[in-house]
Image (tube, rainbow, N blue to C red; front, side, top):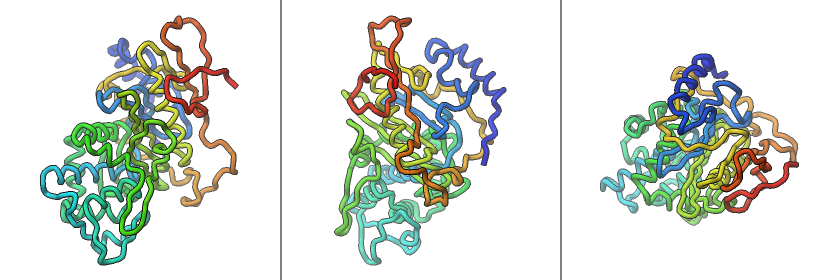
Length: 374
């Protein structure tokens, strides 16, 4: 379905906010999409931020409603950690797999009836394998039913300030009413790190063994990005390819949220590009992503960019995968355009020209090294 955005009103609102926040945001930055199309035609929403400080560096359509898909499981993990801390569960508590849990569609672990798992195994199965059966089992263990767990999810979302999120299930399988935004999932990411620091170890785990089977993380960034330490991927035909990813370098942690990428590789590539650019943004350096200067501003001060009645975008007809009945581009064709990153190191005069580099070819840790355009 098509988004209906009130751009004239949005442009006026952004102009007013920009006049108030010029010293911290700059004259373009966060309101840029009010005056021009969104920066990346292959990505629905993007947010680069610092989880520890709550400051955002770069964003596109951060309030656009989107289907969360398996990012939903981050809330399921949050509520499981809360139950463990409160003493209602332990890591060794047995998690029953009801008939309803076993009947959940893929992705699932699919253990035979009679095989027991623990809370520790269930949580790691949810994170690494994105196990829908384990997610439902945890929901039933914690709240008694899927419906009561959804109420708990929504109460917690409200407490965390996730004002544009509605949960209907514990795993993110398609439901037209289950929606969120990049801004809201940044708040959940920050809450996990703040309230449960131990969650970093869980989300950074690369493999888990459950009843004679070894499962590996579906988060490509853990294998391809130096310093990557989590968190969760998600996909349905309606949502496209989503990810919340974090990375730590030299004591500085960054997070990125991608919603609605057309391909799995495009999702990972865009996330890597943005994190590399973010790590290049150190004191004295000026960094631009696709012509938009990185600026640090408290996430709560970023102006809202979409009204609450905008429907969630449905990617079913355009996501590039045969899973959704769509054609896949020929092998070797570049599906995600390069992210153009410009870095002006400290000490270089503002009016002195610098070269740009397509961040997709950068693999070294920050700061990025400028190279000639091709």
